[in-house]
Image (cartoon, rainbow, N blue to C red; front, top):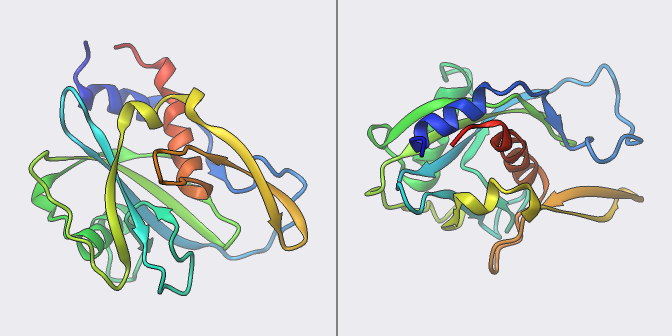
Length: 201
């Protein structure tokens, strides 16, 4: 059985194109000259040989943007950041208290474009099992784990829809217990899941 880090690195090496919120909505209109803002998220995989998990957050209901939604730690790339990886690690420290000494960055997935105008770089990392998340209450209502095997199985994903700006918009969901994981978070996880069948175990 391949080591977890080796499996994930092999998945990152599989060829794939950037993803977007438009993947399931090819008729969605956007301005070709739009300006995209750089952002980064951390996909923190808790490093346990038998029961690895992905650490996700539930955003505070008091936030102006995407309140109460399930998300990766992350945010905009600031001028002071040394690129996307640095931004993802900074945001993870601010949101869940993740110190860099607990993190082994494995690499990045192709970028994901959102309908809100962000170009997100997903950063995949292993996190030591002894790490205990400390949510920052102003941003994060809760931090929780989803089994890695659950979100790396394409069969666990569904396509649902809702009306958005007067049109029906389709998106991926990958529910887990009481948590409704959807939108960009689910799409990025699906991009990882699509790579796993090509990885030897």
